Amino acid sequence: MVHGLEQAALDALASGARVAAFEFENRKFWAKANTGSARNRRYYHNEINCLKAFFQAGINVPELALVTERCFVTIDNGSEFETCIRAENLPVLLVKSAMEAVVGLHRNGLSHGGLHMRNMTLDKSGNIGFLDLEKASGKPATREAQGYDLVVFIWSLLSIDISRTDLSKAAKSVYLQKNGPAWEAAKLWCRQRKWMRIAAKPLAWHERRFKASGKYRRYAAVPAVLDFFEA
View (cartoon, helix red, strand yellow):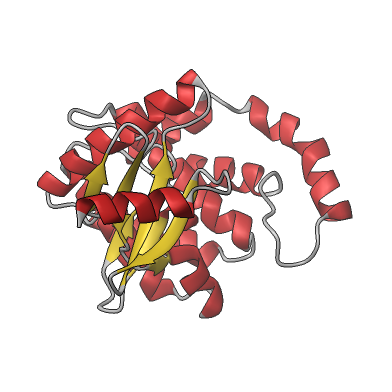
């Protein structure tokens, strides 16, 4: 079974993709290749270590099915969270559930390192999971790293729809009510980077001018994020 799974994974990656989905014995899997720069290879091994550590801590992450020096394989863990919330017009309840999962992550002494909506999952039972742990930190993650998680989470939400401040407020409420440990660290992270407000202006103009409707507004969301954590 292991040999067949590895070959199926390598076949899926044969086009040169770094990450690829594939079917094997009527189940969906994901393969990630150990290729590219030295930095990518470091990320590859860090992700394997963090998948193991997060799983042992009871955090909902994809289960490792195979690890080799060429690739690792995980069992599919649900649909991409961003796709789900876009399809349902960014429902508040799902965002609250996602933030509850983030609280669990942080209270376990862990951090994700890239907490975009696209790096989370939602399964058919409504469970929230985490993907793409290349930049994640196992125990003990620093408060700064956890604060950065919160900044990226809110930034990701507002990049999808900057008008939905109800979502960011709901996420904040959940994090504080559940005694999440890193809100002050997120505020400090933003205070130390006020220069981003000015730097983002020309890039935000470019987004408004050239990006189609429905696409991310990453730079337009920067001042909103800074304002949010200063409030």
